[in-house]
Length: 309
Length: 309
Image (cartoon, rainbow over all chains, first blue to last red):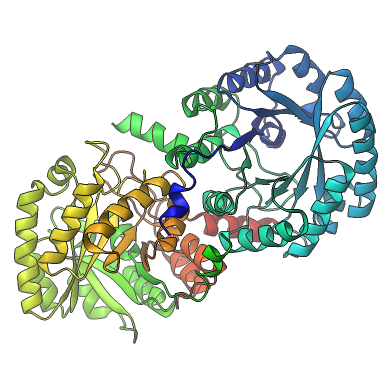
């Protein structure tokens, strides 16, 4: 089976940096807009193909994201980097369009109870909203990415059937989404499950339009990535420093840290175009603005090594 | 490549529980012998094939292990479980023999500077000592396991050549060791490296007598296990709750937690005979006797889930 690993060498993987949105949205501390701009500009310098900058959500409900338009006006656009944002509804889409975005993301759930807890709408209602958002976004010439959360387990319902994940992924593609980010919102996925879910999803829609978004809550995220790589997935989400989590999911914490993911991918000889040292610089900057140590295991280990060595 | 993962289902993996030795030896707090007996007895109830109970090392140098003989006299022997201990030299071997052990482990290093820092002997001197220990142990009818530490990187030398790991593994087998536990003492290994090292080691000695001992310092341990499983490795070390680390290795922390490993293996449908819930009970007991939270990600996530859910 040696070929399995050498076969990964030289492959290209697309990293989607979600720290400024999925990370900072879930931090308790409010971050100044100036600091967000600096953070995003430093991330841009690392060479990402995609950075999710913010969310055009209701500022009353999610005040951390209230400066979305200002961020898009102020960040330095790096050639080769796409800048995107979460959009929950048509009002958000109009703000995103006014801010000049050419790509957005919508955020659907795989479980009824999580959908209701998270956005106060059941799955079918939410999909109707998103279909309208997609129609309008596509008419405006935007690309739309779709998150499918709680795809490996729901904090309220427990197990989520893989066939449901496949069906909802297909519905998102039918709406015009170019990629579905299948997400382990509460960090319960393990390689056996990743294999089963991707097999089921792959039978329905293939895997070319599938990305994965893991949380490292139970320490399985990198093993899950390895599994997905071997099954042919080439796009992964990660959060610089391991920022954030999900405030609506009990027990959820630990976005997969970009540094940890890059340590794995670099070690496999997989090309991402993203410079690990630059990501460490970017997360090191934002670390001074939050109220806890960065969760990234790589960052923690390197800091300990430098202090003791 | 779907077959890769289904091919793991139903396979048997041997877990070597090293929490009472590699774990507790590296905890700052001194644990009462009574508590160690309770801890080991609870681990035995989980169904382990092998538990490393203690180390017959110099009690002046490593006071945490000073009660090795007493532990072997007091623990309840579970049918089907082998109880072993680390032995550094002939004096330790005689104590182990007097305590009735029929299996011991020796602890060699892959890097000269680590060997000197750890046991004040270079690799060749240490191997001469271990050869004498092996000869005597085999004459006493004991089985001998060999650790090969710093096999994926040394805190003082950095990179360790895979060919050296292969050569030293071969020397351990030549001494009469039945299994070499190739160890990532400082937790730097990643799947690309695991693949390369196992390929090189496999060319020299095959992989039937190879076990792996990972630390989760950079979050890669489970991905490394998955890689090794796919290459045919069937024995893994782990420490209940993630107890311990290595006090002589700067930046080293985080034995792979047995619970995290079991979550992965159970999810892959791999049989170990070890009950995850019982391991959680055992590590939960010892957690109240140490001065920090258990590092196990699974334990932390489940506790958070129970508290919030």
